[in-house]
Image (cartoon, rainbow, N blue to C red; front, side, top):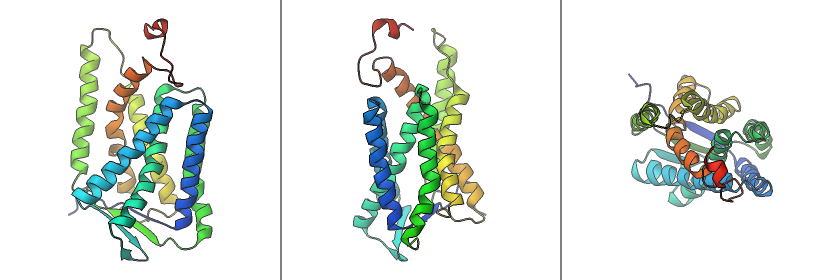
Length: 248
């Protein structure tokens, strides 16, 4: 009997999807620059690089849990690296921007989230004009979902211990962190599912629930601490926070 964590997430899309999404990412980064959201920009690019290191470096090279097919032919390292680079930059940049802007409670947060989520929901419909979804990616999860769950538990337990032991009584927004961590991945997992990029089958519900609960959420305790300490020193435009703001 398959364990609940042993799921095989798959995606099917075409070349037009990659092209349109790449253009959106360039537009999104340009918008961050225009709005002088430099901290968010740096963090988002870091997220894209981190996702690539994990997806290509660990999932593909080390654990061999990632496979990519084009026209039902398994691809070699060259094509795999290019497709995973796009996937990683796409979801790494948007996910990390989503999280950072939420933690910052940005004044235009609703607009940013609407832009990101609306794109996730709409782009598959536009990409369908480009023909059949002949590119397929898949990965097994039994090698690492257990490890991810441990990382998640350790991170949140550390925050809880810090909450009860720090002398300044700095309040840790545990529920808010979980809401962000779960909702960001659930949003694009849901978009993939209803647009047919993720297959609708007996594993659909477990895939969207397990991935949403674990995969992005596991990083929230650590991202929260990074955000907390960075924003105490720097503003979004990279100017240093003055002493009065630090003391708040």
